[in-house]
Image (cartoon, rainbow, N blue to C red; front, side, top):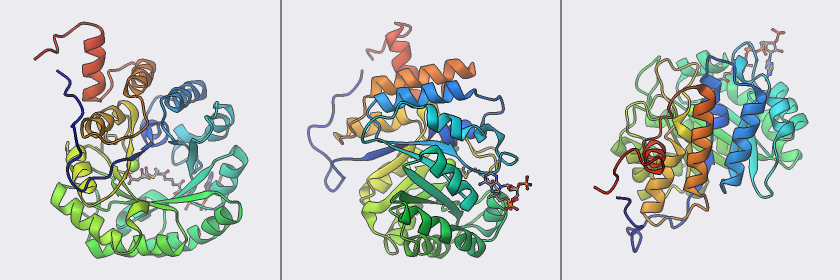
Length: 318
Ligand code: HMG
Ligand code: MG
């Protein structure tokens, strides 16, 4: 049986959380079969109607590196924008930034790594070189009045080099802070982080950037994402990324699964009495839509349970 929301929040947790939906980008970028732009647009529109106020919608990277995202312009130009919702796009360099501007992105996302090995594999340059590439993007974003977000990949481990030091994470966060970022995501690209380490990393990140600008981006490969989110809430982080139906992975992190599912994140937050402004049922519908379009069952436990309940396929009274 679904538990009613807690009568009061556990002490110290934020009362409201911003959920950043990354399924249309982080989720779909890893799909081998081409997902037509019309399906991407339909998905983003459904997510927009659910009350989500931040939707990562496209990626202006090299189409040779990530072919699935080659239709970003068409997607961003075709969506029905909900007033007050931020539609963001990844921009690794000025070429990507200019494309994002033409497509009408509200927020651009620069993405680096706390691991040298991953930086080379993902964006073909060192961490220091990536900062140089991001400088003009950051200045141009500010000049154009766009929000600037940054992502720190491999903050809890790297598929190529293994361990990543907390100092390395703090260093990259400080570089992004110097670039004038509005928000910085601490990303567990391969989902290996566990709760205690996540708190140490978040504390270190908070020593280099304001806590209310930090976000958690947890892939759920090892099933730790919800525990890591709760651990992050305890240190005061109040923005989390998630992917509808648990879509995704990373093309440069073999075996990594998608981000924590948005349905699962909402169930946790709402159960704690934390406001999100997002309608869980609408997200479940969006998850069913994209899973149907991809021809498979979604990866959200909550989504699947609620769909089964709706279909009367299981007795959820126990
Ligand atoms: P490069 O080969 O070093 O770049 O790639 P280059 O400047 O030498 O250019 C090579 C070719 O790419 C040229 O085309 C450029 O025009 C083109 P050619 O002359 O050969 O025909 N090019 C571009 N085309 C379109 N848009 C652009 C662009 N830039 C160059 N913006 C580059 C460097 C960064 C472009 C490349 O490595 C790349 O595209 N990487 C993308 C990697 C990626 O998208 N990874 C997944 C997203 S990150 C992620 O998922 C992690 C995250 O979720 C957090 C987490 O979980 O960790 C955010
Ligand atoms: Mg990711």
